[in-house]
Image 1 (cartoon, rainbow, N blue to C red):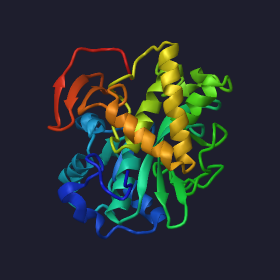
Image 2: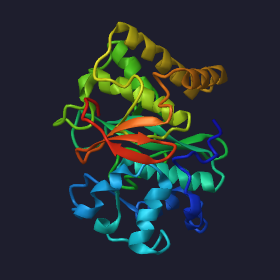
Image 3: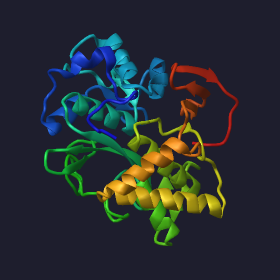
Image 4: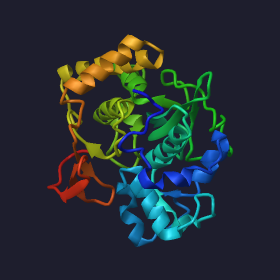
Amino acid sequence: MNFTRQTAFSNPGSYAPLFDKLPTDPRELTAVLRNVITHYRDPNVTLPAESAHDINHRWIDRLLATDQERHDAPLDVPRAAADRVGGCCRDFSLLTVSALRHQGVPARVRIGFADYFFTPGWHHDHVVVDYWNGSRWVLADPQIGPGDWPFDPDDMPRPHGTGTPFATAAAVWTAYRNGEIDAEAYGVDPSMPYRGAPFVRGYVIGELAARQGDELLLWDVWGDITESFDEAGAVFIDEIAALLLAADDGDEDAAAELARRYAADDRLNPRGQVTSMSPTGEVFHVDLATRVSAPAPSRAGH
């Protein structure tokens, strides 16, 4: 994939001019974009009830439309935290990717798990940004910004296995299959059931989809994302994870094989349809081409 080109999800559409005057220094850029979104689970902010459905903004142009309906101002004009768009790590990261691509910078979201939030020993599902600075890929967490972190959030250690603050879903799955980690320590939150091997396995599929330009919501379900799997299902994801790790290391043949498999395999490709298990408690069938959502019967998933 050409990581400079906007996807259907990152495309700002008619709101692209909002990006024209944003800083080109990525550190300054992410500082501005944190002014647009408040994490919907931020313990220090109470978002108004009318913001509850903000988290279902799958497309960046819709996120920007919501922002502009509320503020009608450039993105760097300060917004009160409670008046920002409610979102999550995926939204901070995809908005950053969208702005970087608008500036001609190759950028992509990375899906995996972070060990630097809230609970010691717990690895929260997380999305960060990878961008090309002209000589190397730089990993950044646009959600958190500067602070008391044991690393620079604007230039994080490269994900390598599970020994870095952020580990990709493919690396976590591979470590689980090698008996190196307890997958039960990887998930949304220690108090919630969304964790463990099936959860990590689903995120490998999500990681592949994002790499191929389908930067979907973390609670979208499609293809072979299920609550359980057999050994054949595990081996299948072993292969995808191995290819993702090889592609991360610069193996162009692996990247081409991932693209081929994604295009051909209904277990991996949503084919324009997902079931969205929204944190609001609602379940939707979503047509990604028409952007039409319809209520669906509840089903297991995340």
